[in-house]
Amino acid sequence: MKSILSPRVGLFLLAAGLLFYPIVFSGAFYRDIGVAVLLAAIFASAWNIVGGYAGQVSVGHSMFFGLGAYTPLLFYTLWGWSPIAGIPAGILLSIALAVVIGMPTFRLTGHYFSMATIAVAELIRIFAGTWNLVGAAIGLQGPATARGWWDLTFRSELPYYYIFLAVLGILLTITAAMERRRFGFYLRAIKAGERAARSLGVPVRQTKMKALALSAAFTSVAGSLYAIKTGFIDPDSGFGILVSIQMIIVAALGGAGTLFGPLLGALILVPLQTATNTWFGGGGSGLTYILYGGIIVLIARFEPGGLFELWHRVVPERWRRAHAT
Amino acid sequence: MVALQVIVGGLLSGAIYALFSSGLTLIWGMMNFINFAHGEFVMLGMYVALLVVVWLGGGPAVFGIAAALALFALGVGIYLSLIRHVLRGPMLAQILSTFGLALLLRYTAFWIFSANVVSLPQTSLAGTINVGGIFLPLAQLAAGAVALTLTISLHVLLTRTTVGSKLLAVAEDRTAAMLMGIRPDRMQALAWGLSAGAAGIAGALMATAYPWSPSVGETFGLIAFVVVALGGFGSVLGSLYAGLIIGLIQAVSAFWLGAIYKDIVVYGLFVALLWFRPQGLMGKA
Image (cartoon, rainbow over all chains, first blue to last red; front, side):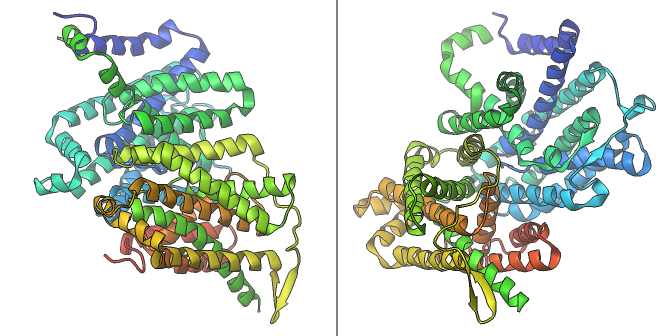
């Protein structure tokens, strides 16, 4: 019995909804929220590969986001290149940094990795704030007016929306493929118990390393997209701890280690953040982070699996089986 | 002479680093658990000191003890309501719990106290003294001495007393300790109280000598990570030495390279340590 809740139909509805959203809601305000949701979904899905699937909780992913954000604008500032040229450079730098961090910490328990990521991100943030080449504390700016489409500087939100949607589509397709392959099983085995996984012949360090590199590459792309769209980057909006927090909370709320968890988290949190900022005015950002902290603590205490797991527990098994098959 | 002054100043703040870091290392050693909110405990200790001075008055002894007691209570409360439940859960829950707590405490402090830099009103410890040509603020000297004494006391408590033996027994083997008639939950709650209390009193000591704002928690939290990584996870004596070393390195690099670079040097050292000697200077492999 097919019903509206079968996974394939659900996926189709989701894709259709995302495709037509900016056409139905054509106001600049709604399109802006749409772009923000997609960006959050991209960086949270990227974090999810290493933080969710592999269970290696990075609390400093802003370092990859910042590298991806700085390189396109740096190339533009230095040589006037199209920001597109900076995207692959950001990816390469991020993968190199991922190797530098992963090599020593993946020999140790997961806590070391978390501590190393937070310290390295902070180190880079302070460093970027003192380095004149990257604009020090002021940061960098992108092209003010486009010289051509290749500058990716558009008046309208619409092109950004579809570029972001395409990147999210690619990322989720890769993640879905990863889930089904041996690599995905390795990751889940490592998350469930590293020692057991190793004794069964899983190449633990190598697998964690690959997951981190993949995650870093896509986080870097998210950073590039953000910087190109905003046309501006500074140490705090690139490397700041709040950037990392945003990734973690979006992924953990929806469900870390699930394919659509980060997207679900983004669909809930981004509008919520817009709402709190509107309600509380300019001083709202502080309250937003109090709220974030509270949500993270509650997730950790009561529902580490996020909303997806809550759904699976609350909705009775029999009802789901009857409707899903 | 200036160099000597820099060195002594570094060692004095290093003694305070040692005190709050020993709280972090206690939790890590006992429960294999990293508290990302530890720096926030130090920050709260500073504000408790400020509130006590402003509302009740009283000297450093009063607000120091008040900060220790308040944070002890907070530590026990956090253990009982949150940590106890995530301790045997997945790693994600463990890290998220204290990470979220850090956010909650930091931004609540921003909300209540605003982002302004504050400092304690003049206390009885104002003024400087001249020790063989080095001018030292009395407050800094007293704070460093008290921090040093308390860190050593914590080490003695853990290694020479019955309570310490019970704490170590729980750390060694929870089940075996339970069979010996020790209540692990009570001991772990006590450890959280001691850990947060140490951070709280370290914050109060810090407040006597330096101005601060709610964002100091992040800096102190990272410093505590570096100290614990250097001293070896779980060793109070290790974090005593490491705290002094980090304080010294920070002061020296701030003096010769400039104030912005002191954190770069310390975090860089942390990354180098994780790379080359993750078990710390005194830890076993």
